[in-house]
Length: 232
Ligand code: SF4
Image: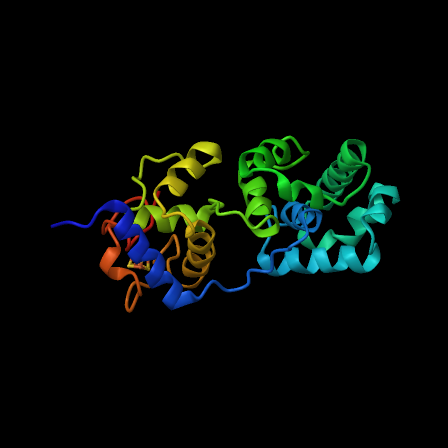
């Protein structure tokens, strides 16, 4: 008898947990720290956005300092991550919006909000889309949601958790992946899928020999999200 989809998903989550143990991906517990960290992560490598975040905090330790600084100074502090002028403008716009809405950068009161309310508000902030909002809801507010980035989506498709026709972006992608996962396992799956995607389950030429979830892999031998070519 075939396994029920949620039982199968639970077995996948458990296997990934054993293999990867939810490593620290460098995300932040404070929601404003995480919002800025995510803005800095656009179109650059993990090493570069971690460096640009550290450089910004060293140059301007308080978010009030970032809001008050000339935009060129903010851009200079984060130049290592690329797109510095655009990111600097977005960061200042986001912080100004928080000051306008809440008179500051302490969003601790939002812990009383539901995940839906959090996502709804956070997606109205400059530069923050559904995935970024979901990261903040997960990492800073500790909710059982699954940010669907490129790794999470690819691993979810290859493991047959969602069909290949599932939208890759935005709310539809998140709803599909979250509904395919057992309650309590959504953030854990995301963290382990990122580790799996970065370390082994690459888009091109994934390293399938010895893969801990090989038994669950439904990736074809050729085509989009295949095991062999990964070609689009
Ligand atoms: S077997 Fe290969 S394609 Fe399938 S999940 Fe593992 S690494 Fe990814």
